[in-house]
Length: 253
Image 1 (cartoon, rainbow, N blue to C red):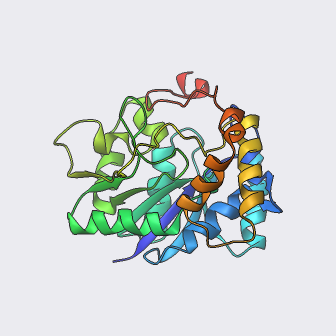
Image 2 (tube, rainbow, N blue to C red; image 1 turned 60 degrees about the vertical axis):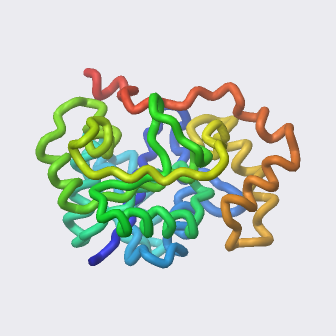
């Protein structure tokens, strides 16, 4: 069983262009995501899935320069891009990350994979977007699926939000697949550690700067820093998180 982590990202972000290569404590955000994913015990390979648009040429240059496997595909049909990347790299199990989550926790990634395998599930996650409830902070998002389930979604899903957000087809209809939701004992689902806006980036830079001395930090280490300074939570308190039904305006056209 080959487990492939696929990090999806593109330069043409609607809310913060070029964000995936913006600097965080001395290295690009994409490097943070790849490095953190590679630390997980159960991941065999990490692949960046970006688009075939010329605007993403810098992503390919970065991957080549840093020995990172990559795949280039559709900008708007992200499900197709994701599926084709998984197929190209021979995945049996696929782990989905987005390139705007630089504080991923390798131990939590392994925990989600453990729960996925224990339940013999088609899909497992420690997050589901609104309107679903979540208990882990936004930005630790780990989604796991069998290649077979991903392939079925690729063949059957036709709604625009399913094609853009990759995984909703696997969990939005109860009973369609065997789904496991991994929850934490306390509710931190309101905490926001992802990067969609300039203020999100400001917060992550501050957090990463305080954690640099401990490269193997866990999400609980991040939480301790976050809670130690109430001003940190205010930096991006007004940012609205997207729902699974929000679709890029370019897709609408």
